[in-house]
Image: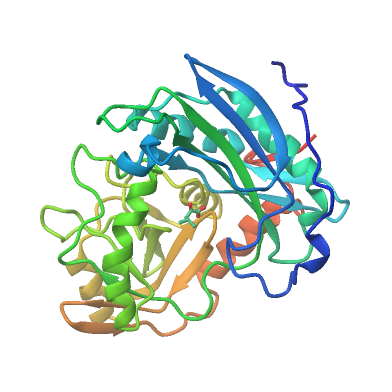
Length: 354
Ligand code: COI
């Protein structure tokens, strides 16, 4: 396969497009008319194609159901004022996808399949990519283990697929978080850095407990002491103390977020002091008391940059007052402008969909 690869396409007979209310999209619940699919067997990837979005058939013994051998990525496509289509740092997603694959004992997906699959699917579904502010086409590449066998061993067969879903915001309304004191998301030597499906499943129960208290998300802390901030599961986390932006270093516990590293580079280029270092919960609580904690925000593909207006820890709720000229909204606007091609891209992050 070359860069000009064209995969076979089976078109859907009638489009769902006209039945979709693009002004009221609940994140990740509507999918476009087509999906990309490719099968791994006997050591190679075969039959890449675009087909109508539809259920797939798997044997109940498929390993993914028993041992959770499943990984994914989150990406977005954007449309500019001239109807050009753009992906944001897709090669970074491809590299991270294969890192996750290696950790989960799954085969790597070649770049031509990953990138050309995205290009071709986005091009085919271009009418689903809205140009208006805040709109995007969320892309979900993923891989599952399909071999029908339940001995505890890696699968010999897999499916790699890409879904596309029109999107607007991920979080609605104010976001308050619980800083974890009991449960953990990841541990030394574990899979925290991978986009393994199980990393997300394991957060649902503690997050549901937090939600019962009126908190939308959990900020995970290190599993040894619960004293050092890690990430929020759907987002990496930034704190602004005074004028300095702080975020935890990536490690085998923390996802190497593509929005996270873009925020760091953007802030740096704007002359905002950035410290990437371990951040303790005591330091954050101390900063609230001294009134130097100005902002907390999360970064992620789906959430983009989402302010966090308060957190609970040790049974105490800490509220932040709204910051005028916040870093969060400034960085979000700059990032979105680059993604949508309304400003130059000095970082070379945009990828034009051919
Ligand atoms: C993303 O931001 O794309 C993610 O993968 C988070 C997901 C749980 C919505």
